[in-house]
Length: 289
View 1 (cartoon, one colour):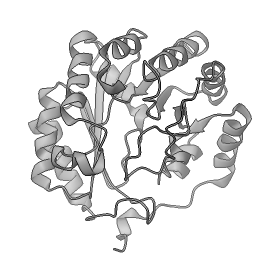
View 2: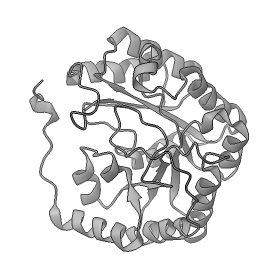
View 3: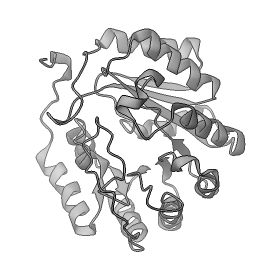
View 4: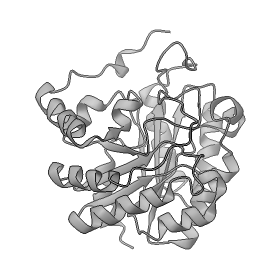
């Protein structure tokens, strides 16, 4: 299936990309931009931003849509990683930072302690930087979730990824209802934190099913929603079922903001969960808590 014209990405600024990439190598850090083959890597690196991937690069889950390497071995956490991450945030002068991780089901707390250590270091040396955490489901360990939330991130993101009918095929170790519960627990327990979620389209869902997921997320009081086109990383991953038109993405955005009341819906073919994440600064200013 040929990619339509609207999925073509402009050539990035090589000099700025190289500067960010060199910094990441220098500090021994991973980004989801690189590990997950994100199509927006050029734009984001050129703008001096990156979504940091901690506790990786290997993931203990093997979701067939994802390009991050599978690694089920037991690995200890690197105690220097939070310090190196904080140094990168400082050297890049980031106003907003997104921190995500691979799934670490081999750890008792799923890696919650590493998220907390990263937040603490960034708060210490870059106090004005807003922090967004894109977390796994911690296998339903709500104590681990509470530990992360008590570190007071500005935004808590947990992606729903797809519709419930496709979970067994696309996210076999995930549970749709568990992800919804996580988001609701965050809203109820830490009401000042902005909640966020995202899903991919083009994996076999219908437009009606996308709307149903949007409804579920709204009921569970999610503030920010991202919707983007799934792009298969390669022949060993799930194929693209359809390419959703820009007009349909506009429709999803309009429904989300006008019908379901999300504070923000970022919906376009190239949208990813961290795409233009820094715009949350404006949202926080407009909807203070």
